[in-house]
Image 1 (cartoon, rainbow, N blue to C red):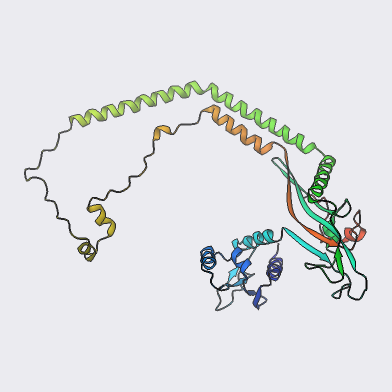
Image 2 (cartoon, rainbow, N blue to C red; image 1 turned 180 degrees about the horizontal axis):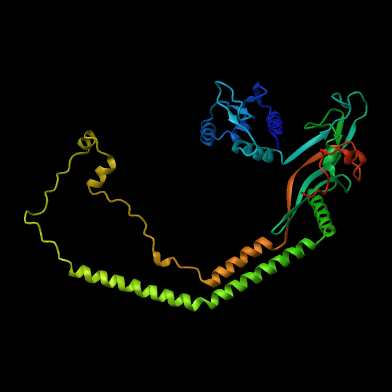
Length: 374
């Protein structure tokens, strides 16, 4: 993702929320954030909790974004936006949260739509879903599916997203249009999508799973050979640990004998030192003392720190280490399949998508292709 693409994405994101652009310069962008954007990327949750609780007026946050590190505007506090920036990741998360599901209506005939016609045009409900199928082991392979399901008459098409890019869509229903009822429920549509995913997996070559299990078996064999060799060497290690334990026992005994032979200090003939008289809190504060020191000096007990019992800390046994390593290898090499919902929407269309991809859709390289391997 180049810097020009980053700027285009940010401008589209801000335009979606109708953000007020204060200044649009070729090198930077100054924007006044709306409420939804400020809560997502403004990084001031305590301010918003205070405003919501006190029911105060919102003070918009103004930010300046630069898209080139060497082009910093003079006299403005700016922030460089790039693909790995923390603020950019917040923008991606906000776009994913607000744009994971949409509802759009098709509008034909330009801005006027169907106003010049006397008869109204029906709009058929379609459920569009973009799914990602991940084949996981020690390697990863992703398959993207762009499905469209007719909710008026049971029908499913692939490459639905490419078809939507060719239409003029609006978030509000245009004049002289009406929507047809939905005869297929969302649960039934999800079952149809699940059957499509299962059919796609059946057509895939399963050699990747067999290869992953073969690598897992090889790693398990190496692991077992290592711990078998470690078990043969264990008697020597136990003898060494026993010798070290005997030395540690002898050292405390010698130290205790030395403590018994050490002379005891004689009492001071002058008597115990004199005890200072306690002073008032105001006098102590006037002399520059701290409150905590005053409390400690006047018998206020401090909370003792929790002592850590070292006897509870035990070294892992070879069998425990072996089982833990086996679990790690199984998680790394065991083949598994994950299906993730990327985004989707409810679309009311008057146009009919083709059952198969048209030649025009195949020639458009910037559009996503169904079943693309990442």
